[in-house]
Length: 197
Image (tube, rainbow, N blue to C red):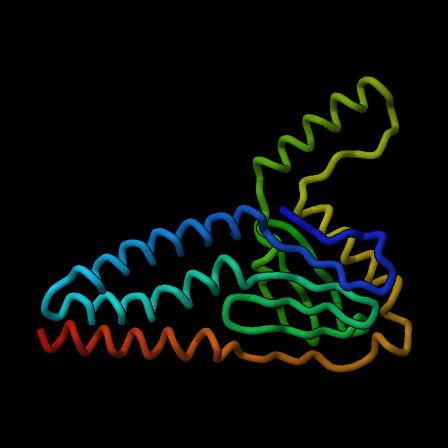
């Protein structure tokens, strides 16, 4: 998991899953390799089916692996999920919590935060590290899983910036038509090609 340098003044911090990015790159490479082979080496309708399949699959892979990120700045929190972007001024952030998944509560609604996945294995590992460290030096800072640390950082930013004039405003949601459009077109074309037989 990665986050930007926290020492940079005025720069937005970004939080995203490094494992998600790596998985997305591998899936795209594999899909383009297999799809490209079908397009350039296939016969009959195979190249067209492969192209439609790629038009459907590539935006979805990008949406679920490369696109999710959370940007936290002095004025607002911006959550980019697979199909929409939620922009929340700090004053409108009611809560962000990390249970079975990371959830943002703002403007009376709940939003999933795809970019900060919860890992129970990482939590158990952090608990073991904390227990060992506490046995050696009691009262030290507890170790945290990456997702829990990211949520804690975001809460601190909210507490620091929610009262400022720049942190006021309304929640806005924008759909990612640049992802949805190609995927829908690919699904329709693929459906037609398979139905025509």
